[in-house]
Length: 257
Image (cartoon, rainbow, N blue to C red; front, top):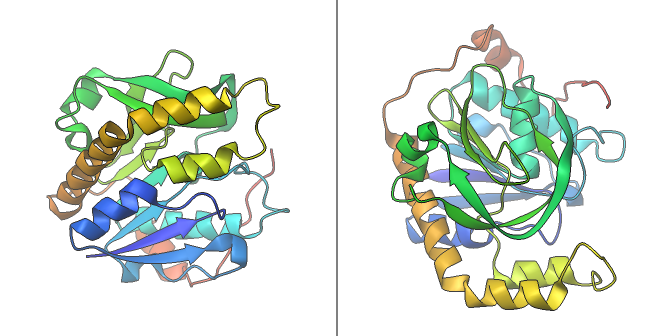
């Protein structure tokens, strides 16, 4: 299995998710968008993983690759390809499906308990995780649930933590990939941020590293089951036109915020 991984910033790598995918035999093609690397045709791969980043989805002027990525996600959706979007990646997936992205009612930074909805507890992505998840969060913006999608999870401060569109496209607001090393990079220089308890967060994530890794392993195992299972193509209009018109590197203009 080959997975196209879109990385937006040097400190936002695939972490536990990448380790779990490779442990299960998946080959990862990591594209470093912040370095200007072009996005190949996603349909050459078996799945698409879009990672996080501190930019927002509407900053195409500052980050032109956001438009290229939006086009790639649309193409993957049109072909009913498995997609997993994490934080910024989840917001990009929601945006590609027509949902607005907005500043959340509260900033979430830290280890946060995420509760599954009734649909989430029954969803194959969260098999074995029905009691909910404790996850790393670091976001100001969040997504609305796209039309036709199913809300799967929430937290006390953020109503929309996960959704599924069709049977194989998932958007997550939280960060299951974060390792202690990734977190250390994020926390560098954050000592003066009143929203961040730097020593406390480092300590808690280090103490729970085994549980966070196991949780990511379960999510990846479940996602791979979804990737190889039966599908119900999502109800997108002009699916064939989207596939036929896409070219690697093509951009689709999108409105600013």
